[in-house]
Amino acid sequence: MSFHHVALATNDLAATHEFYTEAMGFTLVKAVVNPTPEGGWAKHVFYRTEDPSGGGGSMIAFWELHGDYPEFDSALSRAVGLPDWVNHLAFTAVDEQHFDAVIERWLDHGHEAVEIDHGFCRSAYTNDPNGTLVEWCLDTRALNDADRSRALEVISDPDPTHDEPPRGFRAHEPRREVSVP
Image 1 (cartoon, rainbow, N blue to C red):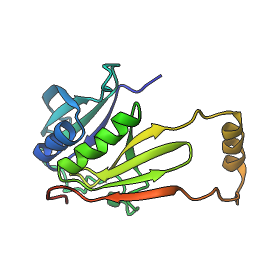
Image 2: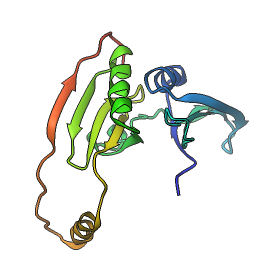
Image 3: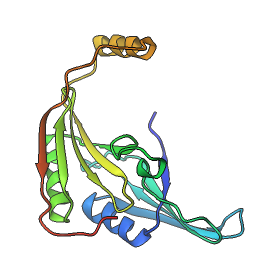
Image 4: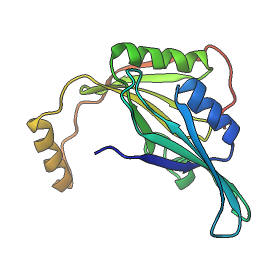
C-alpha cells in the first residue's frame, strides 16, 4: 500500500513551489487555506509525484504557517542536529532514462547532484530549498530472501558486520547558480 501524502513545513513557500514543480517536475494539484487550532492560519499545498509513464503516484504537501508560531529550521535532519543524509525524501525513478533525466533537470535548474551506487539501487541526491535532502532512487535488482534474512539478522544484532561501502560515487556541478539556505 502506498502513502497518500507526506506533509512538511516550509519557511519559503515560493522557493519550495519552484523547486518541486521546476526541479522535481511535480504537479501542483491542490491548495487549502484554513484557520489553525492555535488561532493562526495556514496554507497547505499538495504536489502529485506521479511517474512519467502516468502511473499515478502519491503526493507531497507543504505547510506555510501564519500566526504565533516559533521560528523553526525546516530541514528534516539539520533541525534536530543530524547530518542531512539521515532524514530525507526518496522518490522512485522508473527506469535508467528517467534517472538520468532527473539528474539533468536538477543541474539545469542550478542544483548540484551526487550519485551513488548502493548495489541494489542507484541514488541521486540534492537538497531542497528547506535544507532537506531529496533523493531519486532507481532499483537495479529485485530484493530477495537473502536480503530479508540479512535485514532480520541486523535488527537483532547489537554489533552486526558491516556491508561493503557504496561504490560509484559521482558529484555533478549545477549549470547555474541558485540560493539554498
